[in-house]
Length: 399
View (cartoon, helix red, strand yellow):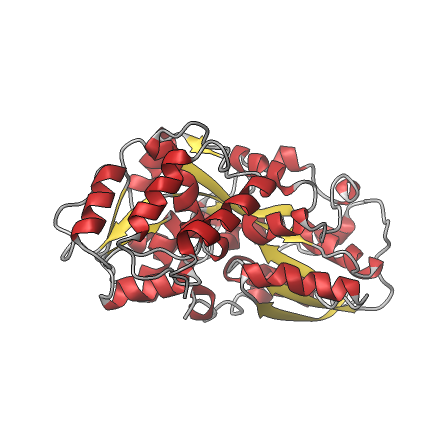
């Protein structure tokens, strides 16, 4: 089970309605046309490795409805983030790239930057896109800086790390990282998190620990994380296994197999809204934590035909518009969601407003306002951290 399979319900319901909200404006601006838009519609294949379609599929479908002369069909598929770079590399080697758009978090983005898989989007396409620094929230603008000009940020959040727990089973909630380790030791196999290379909450937890532990350099997993690597190994002695994705973690918290997990705001709100995790689950912030920012990006693999690239950039224009951004509140999955300024919850679809009113938490606004915010690792260092975690922490217990 994973989150995006659970949230497909209702995703397409408002596509036609969105189509009426000024989408054609993506074509109306006098932007340079290199590569030019096609004279006949194209098919697009979209691969999502981040659960991003829960946030953007409504808008993508709405764009297709509004632009039949540019897009005839859009196929959506999902894949695990660690598997995608190898697949794209093989297609590029065979000169047969059939993936046109990749929607990804910093995991596959970083791997693709490392392996030189992506088209350079900026500044190459800058004359066809809004001026990103003018429209982005400050955190989204910072996250865009991690893309190495090879992707464009489409959604953004202050992620975590937070702890999520069942209050009927966790009577003494950890306040510090030392408390968490002591709790895990006293309650073996009741704490779990997923492999960081394929889990937002897993990697946010990993990247948040250096700040909580006072490590030498939180931005340097090779030479600055001595306390973090030691902590993860010791904590791992009390963890039964590491699932391959976050959906399995949520399921086990929900069915009573586990009592406590690392989480982030969206992964707290959405699974409770869907009934995967009981509504009464609680969250806690460890003393001294820093928010680790998170984002999803649109990337184009090298080898995609120029006429398709032109349509993708035009689609991206719409995805960065306020009507499209308002749909990214979704059912709280990547809360808050919008990367663009001046898109309040009041602009979101009524169902999104209802879910967040019912399942959101009032303390989130305070924590966002009062807690330091940090960029995640740069792509090269994140690839190193994933590899080292796999080898030294997860090797014997991945599942």
